[in-house]
Length: 266
Image 1 (cartoon, rainbow, N blue to C red):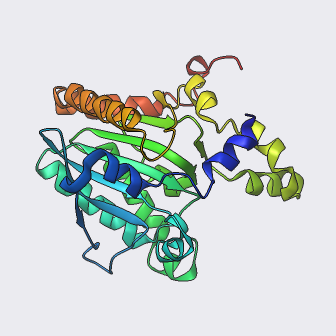
Image 2: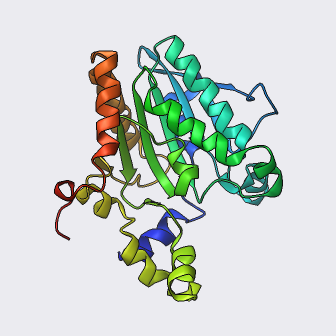
């Protein structure tokens, strides 16, 4: 598939959502928690506690929904500031009890509505970026569909970021990029190539650490169990790291982006 084919695959309405991954990986052990304690609850962000084998963890996902009714209820996976504040509340709780944080990202971007801006959308995202960078517990994020702009990054300041093979991760949508560069959104396929937004592009650039194969379907038990084991091993490794070193390594991970020697010739 070319880059724009990957964009279409990431947006496919039949694609598994964050709730699907939570159900398949954690089952009945997942206990959802609600609200940011400041404004209300945002159903675009699903978060709570779960058991990863014998390790309690905090799980946070951006949920698009699986049908029209669910998508409207979840605001199509475009979170409001109260959603990001709910996520941060759960992360700080995880830090207090030294639980690892597992994030599942699938969003075209944060919601840009008037109400969201009035309630501090930019500030909510910025606070997540700042707090996640120094969070004193391991953080792992997986892009499972779309990873759009700051709305995705607000749950992806992590020790490692992984991507599903057909997912995308970019500062802007191909249509938005094409509209800026060429004043023509129909040139989105060309923009997709320029943005280097596919999992393989970003792995080559050192922006992500691992590419995960796509599940064959929702009953692909081998894939979900394999992913669960990978997550458990990663958390076990990072839980053993000194807290100061963990934070320093996370910071260094992001600081290397854009340095000439961190890029391959592509």
